[in-house]
Length: 474
Image 1 (cartoon, rainbow, N blue to C red):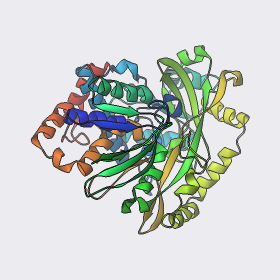
Image 2: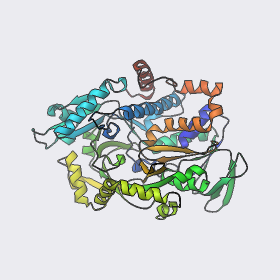
Image 3: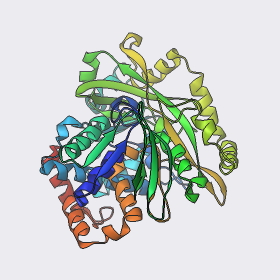
Image 4: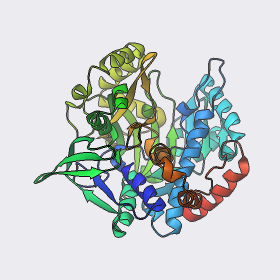
């Protein structure tokens, strides 16, 4: 997130200088690391939780359209930087079909309705739907092996899906910013405090292995994944009182059999269990991690009080205060299904996880798969007039004067980072965003800027043709 914001700001004003403070020994070793997330370019092509049923049983697609348009903004940014020789997309971006798969008559009918409604939209017009078992064998051979020919199932397939190594993307941004002298990177350094010093400046106190120092800056962005909440609370801005966090850890089964990784070429998403958070939707994924192809299944949820994978067990207790304790208790009372789901996940054995895998891949063999610990995600708990509310997704929190912003929440986060950063610029850099120079550059970076991609088909076609040519997504 921080590298995306720095890259975008640099494109709008090359005179700006940035300091990125990282508590680990290098960039993108936590939430952005390819080992710690699904790597899916979330565009709502296959994620069924983005198209829920309403009370009348009708499929709602507004969230899917919103996320799809947001992801296209990320692709536009990649394409513009690629056209200038600043990014090499093959370093972090791979084309891989996105699929949804369901079993049973009710879910097959749901998927059919979803397909019919989405396929009327230009953004999803190339999506395919099938219940033909022979065709499904061609689409996903591992998933179909060993299944009865009487199985009732369906799948959708979207060829223009992506896998993104967000760690490599982060390092790509930073590499080109370093070459241009726009960024200083401060590793193995903690932000121990931040506070206002005067009307228009923040003082940020830093603690490194051998040095203690402070810096002053007119703008602070807190893009620390789950660690953003404690930093937001340190800032003391009134908005910080509205939030608490609930950490959910993740685990993957990773395939070590290269024959299987070569035979499976898709990201295949199923339906989440009742009470499961969106980040726990089961999926069987083709992945490219640091250029090497792999195969993952999961995620499986767990619990630890850490807000980061390399965090402290005291993260959750230290975040509880007078303002957010009651909202946290209210969320617990309202989300019994989620609590039951997490408890059931904690009680799972390796054989239980393997049985879930076999629902996707019936002929899976235990010796081919190993358990790997994924990154931490902190779900947002927000204090509202109606009481505490658990919020999925991501949310921008900013100071009233725009001098500080924080990003909290989980999926689809990294995929829609560019749209989120544009939101931050609208909130925190309002005057500059209205200037002629920034507006001109924004239109150059984003040909779809101010276009209506949700309802008008032609801009979608034009924008995608440019993206696909520059990023080689044909």
